[in-house]
Image (cartoon, rainbow, N blue to C red; front, side):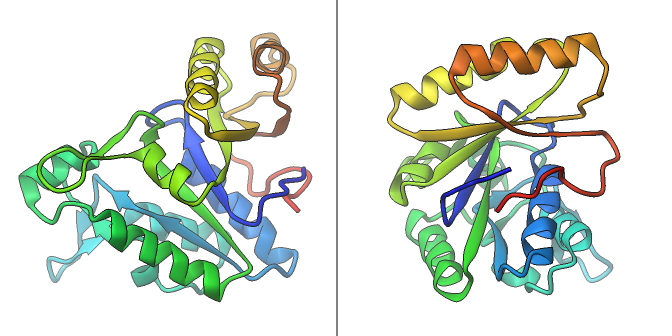
Length: 224
């Protein structure tokens, strides 16, 4: 598997398609290959508190555990919320709305320090990040701000043709660079899953970079 962009933005067809799981395996492969790589996410929702009451960034913690990175949690995500809602709603309830400049500064700091950065999006590409006061922010604003090459993660099962097709069409129409697809929860020999791969490649004109199984501990083929 080859991804040419120095930094990668991971987009999902929606919530709970396994972006974080896939990112953990991608970062693991990069580190194993000797690449000085890092993880970043603008905002995480649905987190739990530790015994001291501090919020733990669950996605970042998962990526650390899967990949084996020693990257500090504190530089992985500037905005962490407890409510399991889109960041714009979670911050309306809890305060501390996302600042566009703060997120870009966090990413730029990592980009200067590491050879490659994988940035994970929140939800799908139409995820609102901030709508109340200040600058209105949508997920695609971060993609465009640094001209990321994007990889789309989708569930391999029923309904994915529609989800992949609509997401890819929207991203291309809005001027975002979508460079490949990854299917999660893929079952080799499953006629539906294998057909979905073929149809989505035909529909989008993109290559499937990898197919990840439910309990895979590695991502096949690497991501160099």
